[in-house]
Length: 329
Image 1: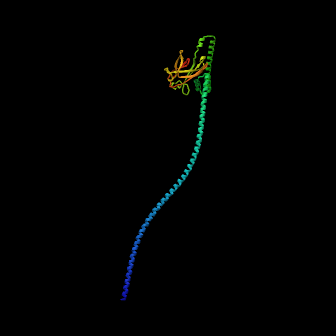
Image 2: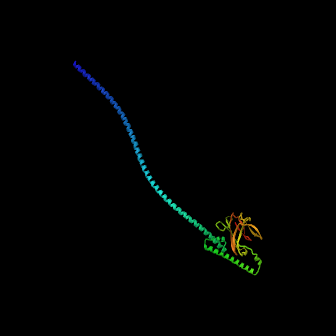
Image 3: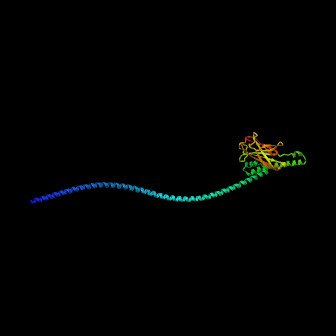
């Protein structure tokens, strides 16, 4: 009996031990399963973190590459900026130097212009004085200005031009000598009382007319459309004593239709056929009449001339001095 009790106790103890062992095993299995599940979750999280790590690494690598590129660009831009600053400083210095040099050059130009203007004024005055002296010399020599210009422009050789002027002067001298001889003859006639009334009634007359038509340059031309100036010259010889001194001479030029070349020609009073009458004239010239001299009229053509013959008349207060004509094509 006692053995049975002991066996029962042992059996009961063994059952309890088995129960406890089974219960522990079951609990251990659940914990193991829970740990396994947790390990699975952790493994998934680790896998996700690894992927995130790889992505972040790629992004970091990309950013490092971009950072390197940006750093290179920054360094290049900094060098370019430093170079631009140096260039700007150099350009500014050059510009300041240029402004200083420009101001000096402008001042020098102003001074040069002032000197040139002064020299121009002096030269113009000299030219006017020279032209006046030349005209006086030509008048004294009795050579017409138009003839003088024609001779000078005809040849570039001064020796040839000088010889032509000598010939012209010889002709003028011969005319003057002839006029002087005529005056001597007339003086002898006066002394011998030959035709005294005719001599006492001597009137002023113009002789040796010469008419030239010039272009704007001063060259002689016979083309009507090119004529810009008409030059009329003549000699006054044996001027009566009562007409010596200051006088007004008048020029009249009429075209082929007997119309004055100046539509606005003024009117003066001259003696015609013994009566004081009004006469329209295109040019008035004040002269101091001497015993003999050559007078030159220069008329600037206002309108284009017509082809054909043009009549020229010269008057004084005492009446008609003489007339001539010229032709243009």
